[in-house]
Length: 240
Image (cartoon, rainbow, N blue to C red; front, side, top):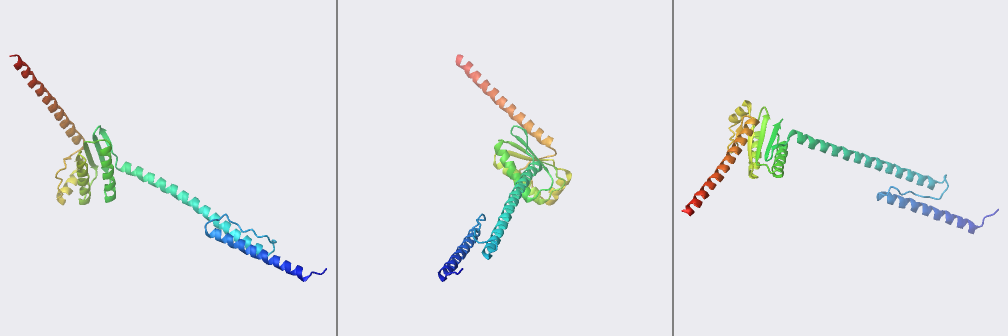
């Protein structure tokens, strides 16, 4: 069986067109992958033993591996984000536990301080305290430092700034629980606690506040009683 030159030329032309299409298909696939479309696959219509089919299979295998790596990376990133969220919640819980805000009764807030005070923790405590003063409409705040055995100049300055910040919001702020070691340190450092009242214990600070409230209420009742006494003589004077 003889094959004419025309048929041979047509076969070669067909093969060449198939090669061009296969190359274009692989090139389009690679461009899609470069743009992040890892679902793209090269489809080459050649026999399994043909070099172009082997090349297309290799390209598809590499793309599939890239897709697998991306999916694993995304899964790891989600897991990492979940872990970071959990850590942040734990940090928030630790901050709340390390600086609890105890509302003793309406308008009276107690802040017991325990542990070491650094600049970061002091800033967080001040922010939390000021927010609580505004939200709870606090008028009297006690910063209790019974749990602090020693205090340096920086820590003392933090407490003074905290107390002054509370006063700027219209609330009174006092310190309680100053032990002998802290008292000696404050005197040795020459720190002035001017403008900030101090008490030996939390109980003393609360008693001071209660007694002052009682005196204020008594004074108000007395003022109302005096006012009523003045109106009565005016009435009797009018009948004379």
